[in-house]
Length: 90
Length: 252
Image (tube, chains in turn cyan, blue):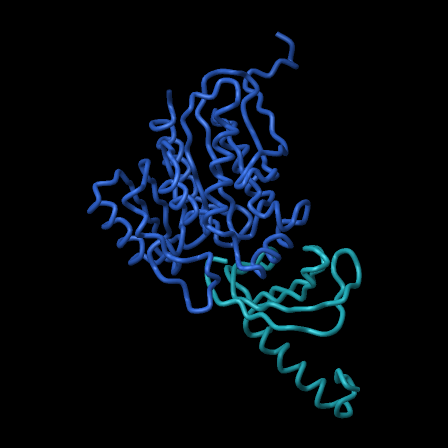
């Protein structure tokens, strides 16, 4: 965390981390040094549930191009499915 | 002499020490096996955490003849977690509070001073966010030498939205208790050459002993052997400077 803003949002769903599936409660997005990806900086995305401890985490480290491509793919996937199919109020 | 008799053996492993608030925290200790008179080095880990590369640094200091220890700054939030999971947890919670950092370094320092052969001298070294923490510790505690490796947000304001834990601390400079060695990369943005120059100027103004080096062709994290930022030439020269600096300042 030498650098940039951490965006934090609430999420509703599940994630699969190193110890298995867990109920996810929040996600953080930040541009910072990666742990594994071979770049100086990446867009880091964590889906977490702090109440379940540090291992309840799905971690991504992506270049900014592919992070944005992922965001676009998310929008395309949602818009190509029947509206509201995956909504909280489905 | 038996080939089993190592004359320069070190021992390294995980210990529990008393940190800020008397909390029992995890730490990685490495020291020569013999009980000769030696100085102590507290290693402050970078934001990504108490990881394998940091433990190698602790062992390096032991090989070079020091008692060395790295407190796990995320011990309370994430005991036993993978270092990157621990870092993510602490990040989401707002970072390590400055007061707690100082208390944990004080506890680590006290632990080193209690080891057989300790000569009572303490050096502190930190990398990245650890560089800022080193400056903070050296302005808050009596130490004998401090090494700031590319610490950001000592001088400059962090970008808007950074956790409150990362505020500038230049105003603490009058209380710097030890000579400071600063090692930076010219290509680094955080801290930038301007920020480094501002810290240099302020320490000169205050007549504080310090020695800064900025390496061409190196940016942030140039000591990190496990990252693309690694710059062998800068890192080798940096280590040479660190060991000379500690040799001068941590001898009995």
